[in-house]
Image (tube, rainbow over the protein chains, first blue to last red):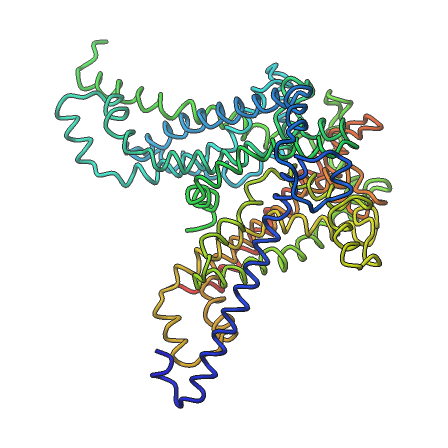
Length: 289
Length: 310
């Protein structure tokens, strides 16, 4: 292609060699960048299999992967399993509530004509724009008055409130695109409205539910700010917050520290590697039109 | 009053729709609308611990912005947020743009590089912060160990303990954490450019640099707008990385102090001196909120104007 349009064979050659050297340079930059992105994670995992002395003496060495004492100690001696379980409960319950409430509002707005629809959408749009982090003081007092402070519920309701608006928009956007023939056919057959929603429409709405779930699951699983403010009791702490107590307790035992970090990072990283396309799509959904 | 079948049907229909919309709206009103409205109100009161005292007008705002104790701390922190914003705009978003351009050509190993660049993004900020804190440890950290092993001993230093490098180290850790995000958003933006446009520019003999500057960059303007807005909000809410890596006081000597840390110290107390000032905390949150809303919307409107429709 290039040769056919180039004015002379000489410049065509220099053109090709230039594009080859550019491709070569691009490849080097990409390999270097991927190395910088992955190597710290690799060192973290490697160090988790070493004793503190080995980490200090041979920081770059490949460890003996049968040495799992650090992991055994993290799981047996510390509260990490509790933190882990709390993170699963809090993330799971929040996502469930976000999907249930988000689907309810999204369905009503998308499938039923009403004068209040615009108002409802504007209401949730405002929720999408306002950062709840800055209202953490009133939220703290509200949760205390409701008796939810220092419990996993304080986190579940907060994360649901943050994630709900985007779920409403994702669900409403999708449900609006479904043809009304489906509904009408079921209605003629005498199906009730709840039945139409549950058995006809919702089975089709799994893809947007997956997007809404992933988009919210990663920030909820990783959040640190709200537990820091709301939770004091060790037994109610989630993984990121529990990790700070853990890191404070074992400051000098680097083998333990790296094992703790590896255990905390493992589930989301493995899930990401298995479902990278869905993760990337879900997490950039808000910024990619 | 007897109810006609038609009325009964609409009543039934109405209560069904109400059943769908009322719970989400009540939930949002209670946990989002009410706290945000209260946050503004709280700033006008004096607080004694968790109890609300007298109405004090703008006194909290005055103290936070111009007071003898709070004022200098707040402005010092604000400056660091601005530094972080500018540095991250260049390193994180600019780097993301260049990486996206390299990935756009789908070179050998394209899929691998795309997955790799996003790995740190899915990690918790707490993990990222602790990991880099360990790597930057003056004696045993990976960074200094690497410098020793190649004979660059002179360059090794206590990165987080040195006032001249601490903020830069936090910014680089943040860029490592998030560069994958702008990369993949820009990549999606570039993939939306009609390929005829790029082909045509190539056939005209446009150089790589000209193509990038005059064709690609203007056409991904919508991505730039959204990425800049998100970075702006993120930079002024910056909290986790500094909290984990340098602690609540922005050590050494407040050289890494940012508004997020100041807010947390003011509202929820310093670990050493357990003081809580909800009034000043709310005032700071309100000022920050208004600053973010006003500037983010102005910037968005300004950046939108340079977007090209295609």
